[in-house]
Amino acid sequence: QVQLVESGGGLVQPGGSLRLSCAASGTIFSINRMGWFRQAPGKQRDLVAVISSGGSTSYVDSVKGRFTISRDNSKKTVYLQMNSLKPEDTAVYYCNVRNYGSGILPVDYWGQGTQVTVSS
Image 1 (cartoon, rainbow, N blue to C red):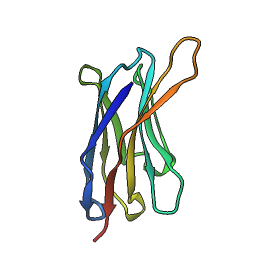
Image 2 (spheres, helix red, strand yellow; image 1 turned 135 degrees about the vertical axis):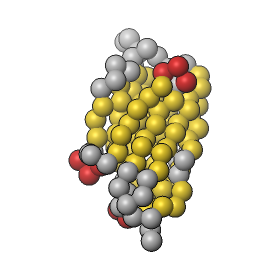
Image 3 (cartoon, rainbow, N blue to C red; image 1 turned 180 degrees about the vertical axis):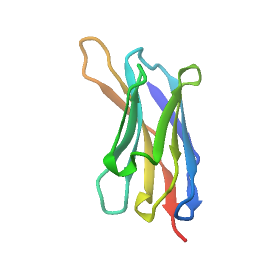
């Protein structure tokens, strides 16, 4: 089992910055993926950014150049630095860890979510 605790959300003006953190506890497999998803009211939960255990990253097009995902394996923590925030970035942001094990389907774990509101 993996438990995830997110922090860093809040209210920010357009053009501002926030940094989200997600600390994991429990068993994270050597091959894994950590990432951030978001869900706006009335919409589905969508991928924002992910980072593999090898350090490869992927971003949704709408945040490229503005958001940066990183991880500290020693702390089992993933970060999302969000710059040049826009009102359309407003959503609940969820941390995700996916464990990849040999011979089994990937297993996803989710945080409780943290609200990010971009408004003047």
